[in-house]
Image (cartoon, rainbow, N blue to C red):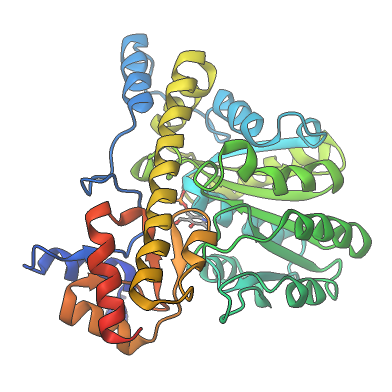
Length: 394
Ligand SMILES: Cc1ncc(COP(=O)(O)O)c(C=O)c1O
């Protein structure tokens, strides 16, 4: 049965990790996979998470099945984190999923069931897994103009002109904040315009928010999403606790549907449960229990918020250091975009040759397309990174 299956191509980001781990140079720098690291190069377990785990252990809960919707307390907490104070909350239904990846797939499957001919529009560029997830659900995928390669900012005029052409059979996938891979977020005015276009033209906004709190702060990062929530009747959200709770391997996320009525949202969630039953059945419980414990406990909530702010401050400090160092080394403001970008990533757009040179000559590991995980840098690596860029003329 399996003889004809060809060898897998291998994941470009994951194979970069292997190459990095095998590199004996002590000066090597890993800017590949999108995980947050502290200044010692460690992806820490957050203190709020450890404290929540201790609480859970003492509570001596059960490991019995939880049910298709996952942890309903978590569903309520995560919906509140994103939608509290908006009119969408009342007409929403939340499904716990294995990470935002699971949410993306469940929502894609739901759309494929209800609107099989829909086209999902993703930004150019977008998160590397957006296209495959949507396509594997059977949906057509097309790209809308997003990043201006010269300025490394969002080309909002071109983006909005294109989105203005879309209609009822279209789904527009938007990054809630901290755009992956570019780091360039659209303005609040663009969110407002998209809400207006969705209302006039009838396309479905699909907001993927995987980095809430890692841009300008928890509330600020959800501002665009909340504008949609107050002004558009129907939209969907995929959200992740991988980065902002540091729960990458616990696979914790949620799919949220907002519709014209609570009944419509709940029925859609019921359909997703049915779809999930046909694949992974139920999401893993532990990460969701941690998140819910943190969000319901004032003290843990505060500890978590402080830790998230500290992560944010560290990344923004690295961004400022990169800007300063590049200005000094190039006598230009060519690299000021590092300071304008939000979240963990910046897309440098450097060529494949330069990426290979950085790896071979300096042990600097960057993924194809030139995405740099700024959150993977430590402060002592800023100078050598900038020097390497300047040496190779990137
Ligand atoms: C934009 C975006 N969406 C979704 C995901 C998937 O997140 P998770 O690890 O929770 O599945 C990521 C992960 O990098 C991401 O960057």
